[in-house]
Length: 423
RNA sequence: GGAGAGUUGGCAGAGUGGUAAUGCAACGGACUCGAAAUCCGUCGAACCGGCGAAUACCCGGCGCGCAGGUUCAAUUCCUGUACUCUCCUCCA
Image (tube, rainbow, N blue to C red):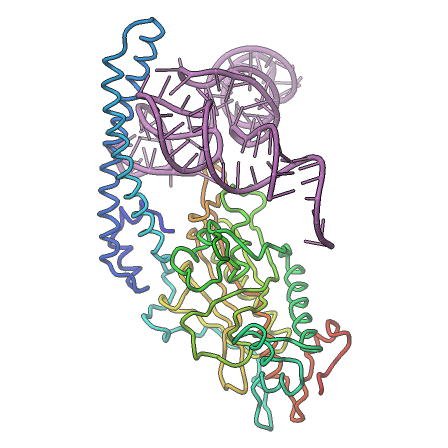
């Protein structure tokens, strides 16, 4: 949520900034018109309420003195009716203003490359050697099926497309990867959290998934409950409607959870393999900090996610997403993309974002500064990392000519000493 | 799932159809070399609006879990609902 006062005071600045995110400037004008009308009605309504309060006091006095108050009561009967009518109108207007504001994305940071489509992202850095395979690399789903550790057919039978079973050492590898991530994260100072996987509408609104992106998630029938599309939702909402004691900042959380996504609109994309599933595991990182530190925290968050890939020995690069490619809530996003030999390309495995005060304002998460004033915290989130995609990357990058897969050194202890997955 | 009790400031805790007690904590001041104690004062707010450069004053609205209703007037009465606690039931 953007600051309505800022929109009111700097409409041209907001229009210019949000135009880079495909927001029509007319939307801002429409919002401001509604807001002006709303404030006009507020003044009217509150003037009448002040009058009612005054006269009510007088009535109270008269009654106490056993004097006649019928005239005043009759007069107030009308005023109250007027107030009621006006407030009904005002309620509608308030909802409209709120709804319009809630659909506006965050203001991009000045350093974010401007781009109105997916291209134009800027590569920040590269790391690692792409594996030099002297055979035709197989896709991870082929490797997994051949080894009998991934079963997409039965996933489809039991649930549908974009579901699978991990079997045997496949399930073990998934577990090894997320335990490795969680251990690394907690060692770096993140507090491990095991949150709810089903959340209410207020939470979905607080992190910005609602009201705009309802079609992307799974909701429980006839209930205001949603399967989390990312652990970011329960982690950020942990402090919803709270004031975080200043001495606790910065707060660093990490959690392993499944993530549930309907993938509406992505029909035909990544239909095979572990890249795009309706249910996948992800280790998420969330940070709350003071505004002045959030850009440093974003850099540290990104570097930490990179370190995980480095320890796994997977080649990757880091890109800064363009204004229109970033998620709704982000002011800046760095994506980590890991190398996939079979596809001969980089694929996203982590997305690290600074949402500045955007989520904090929606979710009312504040702290008291040294002057005792309440300020919105800045909230950041990043994958550390997507587990399924990490498993896919390992299968492709560590595959051998005979169809077996070497276990990365750091995972061997987590695999019970297994160094190679074979048939 | 059933029955009952509860939800009021940072915390504790009264209350009533007509200005939301009191205590603790906190903050400011007095006293003191300084502190403690004591005394005086401030203290609902993560909300909205007006005036403003202001997240400074001031004014108004709003405010006793949330949403409605009755009323000139609701923290109080009515309805619904969420959550917490206790007991029963059921379960892992």
